[in-house]
Length: 495
Image (cartoon, rainbow, N blue to C red; front, top):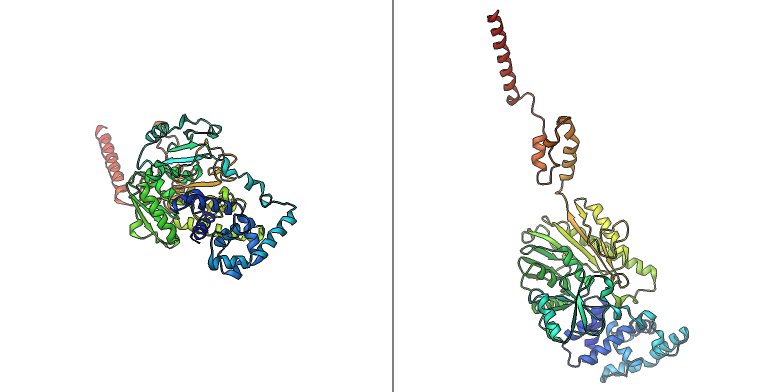
């Protein structure tokens, strides 16, 4: 039964976008990795069909099983090589076998097919994920890109240098190259497996999709800074942030799921991260005014989303469109709350918002609503050479997809603070009042540049008109009067 319990645990994590299937299987340290991997892969492939069978027969209500465990058991019972457990579990499943088989047969008749595989949609028979390159991020906390390249060349791989265009990333056999956008990223052919490789086990490389590497790369925190990773698990982006800041500074990482956080702690330990401070806490309940966050200048926010951009989940979209739209609306509301909350940290300079979703409702619409509610922040245009932009009216953002960028589906926006609260009005007043107090024909050599944010207070003082009735204004007038009297007296004496 241990096989099914572990397979169900991994299925739940995969469908909750808590990690890649293969990585979760190999990190599980299960005794028979190949058997576990085969069961999880096949169950995942038939996931939507299994769910329909389970729901139609009301199996969960009759057995009190949870969906992930029910899926792996039903797969082996109906499609696999038979149940590999005994005792009460096998007796329970055999009791419902005839109803489950009848439902599977009904589905085949309805779709006019004879084989189980023919029930699968084309995208599952030939998944896009199998065509995507294998991306490997070099962990610069433990090594360098040059050293990893040298090691792999000695290990039988052939290095082709740096890619110059997207088409170069379509590789075969044991060829690899450096990515054209991200300097720490190496690219291999789709079937390349590193889970048993020394570099992976030692934490020198991280198996991370290219699109998932974009948020931390674009946030680009400086070493020594204080950063928040708001929804951190499973931790790949967290370890990437630590590498960018060279383990110097403080990295606050929050996640509400204690199990995910424990897994993340192991990953960060393997990656050599030492600047982290993990907290099993809801980010929305973190107080921005807490003194320990007073120096936070960067935030990475990758909140829960539909996961519609992940290749392995693209065919699990609910058939009930009304239910799906309600789910997206609920997610978008949560994402906007997280974004607004993140912008409340007093010294925040830059924030990256990202999702592995293809839906505008979770992406551009959330960002547009946030900018409307937070006028002190603006979007920063990202990677002009990136082939896929945000949907109108936000082309400053990035999108990623299997077709256009050879990655999973993704969305990234970078928000930057451009004025302190209240400064916007002040700057407008100065600009409006400028022509009234400055001479009309001021020589071009004497013209001052527009005031920067730091200089706005000083320029307001300089441009303020001199008081009329004060002492400062009366002294020059008295001096002029005395000069006129002396001149008049001298003229009378001359006569």
